[in-house]
Amino acid sequence: MITARNILSFLVLVLFQVFILNNIDYSGYLNPYVYILFVMMLPVKVPRSTVLILAFLIGLCIDMFENSGGVHIAATVFLAYIRIPLLKVATQKRGEDFLSVKPSKLGLGNLIVYALLCILIHHFLLFLIESYSFRDIGTVLVRTMMSSIFTFVFVLLVQLWNFRKKDRI
Image (cartoon, rainbow, N blue to C red; front, side, top):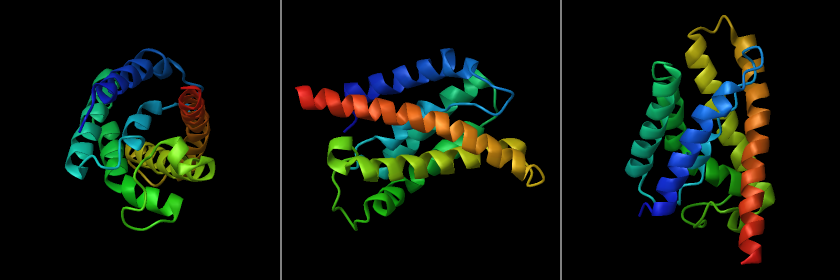
């Protein structure tokens, strides 16, 4: 069920995150985490257990490079666990009415809603666990918003590029 393209995507996103995006840090408020695109765009038919294991592995890779003690694992595994319900909310469909997470199948509006929900939930949980306190909720919310905007723009650009690439073929 997992293809060579999925493995390549995993490796590229981890390397891009670790060597390029982890060096972007604007006063601790802008931390783009685009590696979650891997979990968000896994095919719907991949078994949930496989998705959870892959989410754990990608979170582990990021945590190892950032020395962050498991916060990426927790946030990414949670995202993997709720991605199908989020997809159902975004598409307003029930059951297996949707077969793909591809932009051409979802439509731009549904893709935007799905991506925003995934990114906001992941980032909020990540920064909340990292702060380990509700005392700094204001900072958590600001970091979530700023990082989510950058991550969303990147995710949207990647998905639109993939969408346009498929149209040319």
